[in-house]
Image (cartoon, rainbow, N blue to C red; front, side, top):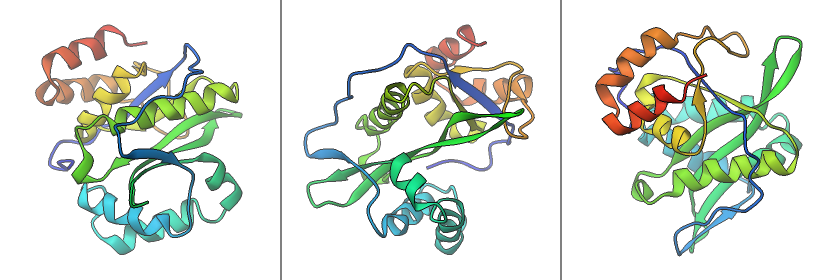
Length: 200
């Protein structure tokens, strides 16, 4: 669960490669899945439980407005993880956003159910996203995040994403200098050291 008392600054990260052409593994009892009808309901519940949204209604409305208006793109980009009961336990979305006069591959909403956190499912979801973009020859991959998602930042860094000192996309102001001072207070020292030693 994220802590929104942590100051908010824009963090931009990027994965340049190498391409990943081997599908990642999941713990026993879980499988990757495409979008299924009504996944937005479970997605909204997970987001509220993780404190990304204040209310279930706001989370559900966001998903419907952002993604359900282009179902073909959502079906193509949604990566879910389900358990043996076919319940959605985590997801990440392959998307694209603007960078100057072009579009770039982007990561949207890495989320896992509270009941399966610390099982490696978040890492596998990020690796699966890299695999998917790699097979479509759509590297590099950008993402936007913030210090209160420092646990997710550790996962991104572990998977090969590097924090950017200046570059950005969409209209995000890169606030690297202020963000890393906050991250230093919350990230495990070894993860923080890796993050700042591999910056672009």
